[in-house]
Each structure stands twice: as C-alpha cells, then as structure tokens.
Image (cartoon, rainbow, N blue to C red; front, side, top):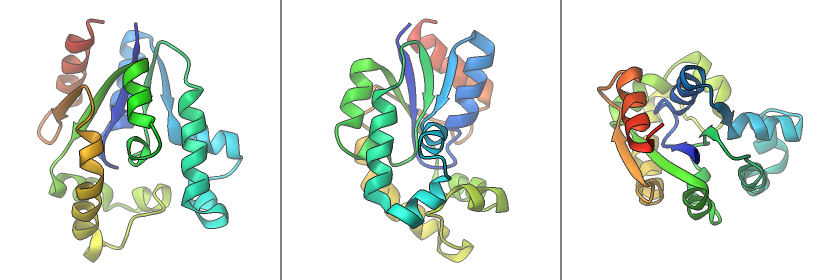
Length: 169
C-alpha cells in the first residue's frame, strides 16, 4: 500500500479520519503536527511564538520527508502550500483533499479545545472571514490533491469508505 495523505483546512476531520482508517485497517497513523511537536519538544503554539512561521514550515517539511511507507497521514492545514510538499506527497502516495463548507469549518473550530491547539485562529467574530481568506490562498494547493471529497455532510464511515474504495485497500 502506498501512503494516504489527508489534506484540508483545520476542522475538516483529517485527524479523525486518519485515526479511524488506522484502527479499522491496521495502518500506521501519523499526524504531522504531532511529529513536529515531538521533534521540537514544544507545542506548535510555542514554535510560532518563539521561532515564527518560517521555522515551523521548515520543521513541517522535514517531518513530511521522514514519513515512512505504508501510513495514513493527517497533514497540517498549511502543509500543502509550502515548498514542494504537495508534489512530494503525490509522489509518495495518494493525496485526498477533505473539503468542507466554511460554515461547517467555523462550527467545528469555534470551541475552546480548538483554540488551544490552533495558534492562528482569530476570535469568533473574525472566524468566518479568516476561513474564507485563508481558503482563498490555500485551496489552489488543496485542489492539486489526487481526489477531493466534500466532507460537509458525510459521516466518518462514508468518508473512510470513499478513501478505501479509491485506494483499493
């Protein structure tokens, strides 16, 4: 099996879907954000605060290039937009863009837990404009994925079924 890379905006369900595929099919599950935190020995928020985004993006590229074969990988939301990351992922496996409507993303992100984990999130009043503006710059990269799945109205099982049907696992 080739790697399966899940891309998309924060809150699109990448981590949840990756964990489900891992558990259901016995495939190693990796999250690039967790790998970065492990390598840096601090949180993503701390990396941004202490070293800035360019340093974070370089760490992100490094952990991506260290991904072993035969894994399902949940990528950070901005990962496909930097360096040759999307091209590299497509060469190493099958890339899925988990697309969701703006209002779905906003509802999933506007929680206390989400704000702790995600250093770039603005307050509630600015969340939808932030998502729209960020998607405008990121979506051209996301759309380079091998497949796009609109996850807005699908269950986890339905999303996983589509991914498994496509990859033939």
